Length: 590
Ligand SMILES: Cc1cc2nc3c(=O)[nH]c(=O)nc-3n(C[C@H](O)[C@H](O)[C@H](O)COP(=O)(O)OP(=O)(O)OC[C@H]3O[C@@H](n4cnc5c(N)ncnc54)[C@H](O)[C@@H]3O)c2cc1C
Image (cartoon, rainbow, N blue to C red; front, top):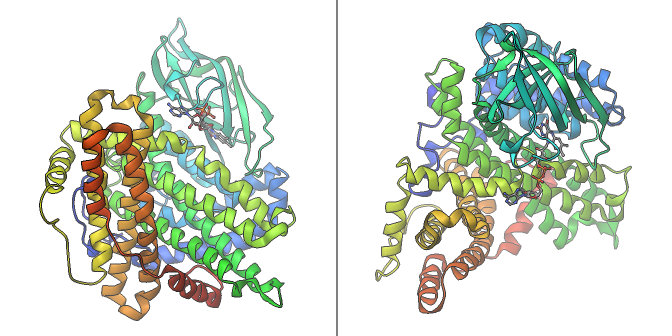
């Protein structure tokens, strides 16, 4: 990617304390020719190879899954972010978002995402030269398939609590691994597993374990609610003999492999959710146009228009966040010349944004599939219609790559840690907001396009900073025990990032394409912001009321009211217009 096409590096989390100009964010409209071509190639692949095979894939035809992965390897899509020296395509992060978005159709996308993300990723980023040479060229061709085994029956969210042990052999040539791994994607057909175990009782470490290893067996396939075309099974290790040269990263540093890889996975998961939501919107529009009740198509009813418009609005916001984050990540990677260790550090910078994307993207998809079933009515409940499968398949996204509860706790926790370590000036910003609340007039932008929406985004950031500041002042370092407060603050932060990302994209479209062509984006973000304010108000009130009481609480609530005062707009009329455009196009398109 050309350097001017990505965002200039800014500190992770800084969106909360500084203003961003529309020209500084990457948007889907900034995709270059090559990235668009990649998108089209993947779309064609999905239509040609996946859509006709959805039932066979759900019947767990692993030979077909492997064939499809090999074909994606031939197209260069298994080694998107892998350096060319190991057979990879060495493309940028934004291109990998485009692929994740387009390939997001049910369980096969989990097989693909597992292989390229948590199968190949750890070896590409943390492997020794010998490990990379041994595994990557075959993995990017799809000759070897990867998997990632962290979870255990007693260690899910608590990933540091794993019990699998690794004991060094007396001749120091290999480790003996013993333990059980659970819910491992690609288990039925993977060849190479990144397995986490503890050395000497407490040194969390990652090992590359080959399928043929003596003492290593794969359990029966799980019967799942959704993504049935992906494989999920347990792994059993009984003194599995793993050569010392298969330690991945350093002994005792397995958590770095585990968590950094999940960071990358999170914003790609969000891109997949956006792609899946786009697909569902298209199906919902098609059905609503076709199905007649009371003598006219469902698409002509106001309540159905409301649903279609809202599905599109939230998808637009999620998509804006995902590509903004992709631009940020790519911006920090420029100039690192593909150095994997440096790249990993750069990606860590945006761990907060990655967690936000994961939560927001998966919840937008959850909303879209639910409304899709509703639009299909009783037929949505029947397995022969696509709405049921989409509904079942979507649910996993709120569970894996860190549950949404864990990602909410991480969002606030990481922001506060960055502030403590002086990497983000949150504390002075929160103190300034607390002072401002007592001043006669608030500093607000008053003119220019979308002035009211820009004012509201600023005010939401202030409300988030103010609420977080009050909570931190009360609980100090005991705040980690106040989960509901932490999650409430996370919701305020997530909304601030969501609103701003959609707004900046609309402003950028307005600058570049003019009012007429930017109209739909403007309509969507105005509606979104209008509806977000009462949600944000309610969350901030809940947090403040949990933290303070009496006169102090009353004063704080009065301050909050000043930040969040607004006059509602006619979103009924705007949503109808948005829906009419969706119905005319037959799909979500901006
Ligand atoms: C289909 C599928 C595929 C998977 N693929 C893989 C894979 O390839 N590799 C792999 O290693 N793992 C994989 N997993 C495991 C997945 O990452 C875990 O299921 C997930 O991390 C949650 O762990 P758990 O299921 O043990 O739930 P738990 O950790 O027991 O959580 C249960 C509930 O409690 C909440 N909770 C837990 N801790 C806290 C806390 N501290 N505070 C507040 N709430 C909390 C959770 O948010 C959740 O709502 C997969 C799971 C599934 C279902």
